[in-house]
Length: 188
View (cartoon, rainbow, N blue to C red):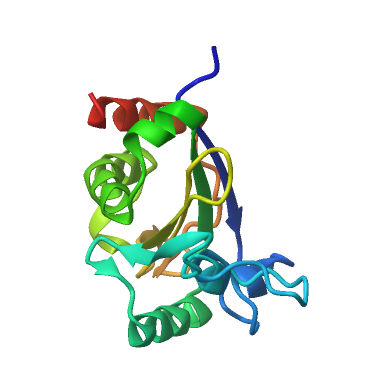
């Protein structure tokens, strides 16, 4: 029997070759991909993907669906941050997802509940994180694309006497296992 929830995570540093896509440094970016879908140019536009009603119900944050101006502000933050940008896919087994994850409101409530603990367990201050996500229903299994980054550098470097962003993006498997467990508990 397959697990009810799967997660897969990646991260992109300032010098990563895929940073332009995930950091909104190109026209067709991850935010558009989340909002609308894959464009005919074969370039992934993540923010636009999530707003395509056939693919997604829109990019959302803890506050709700992002407006056009909200997306513009988020893109500016993404372009200007020196933080690592994380991308996580939370995928639901088909029947489990059909039963539990069928609306953006459900996805938003789920993430609002489980992300603070996930961020703390991963070594972040939840109050210093910008996150955004999109629920995608265009495949056999519903899945959430989640992306986040730190707002301010929080690690003190005694040599330079300055604060810096995390320079390693790995998140432990145990932290993802806890996230999956918290998601399942949410639906009990």
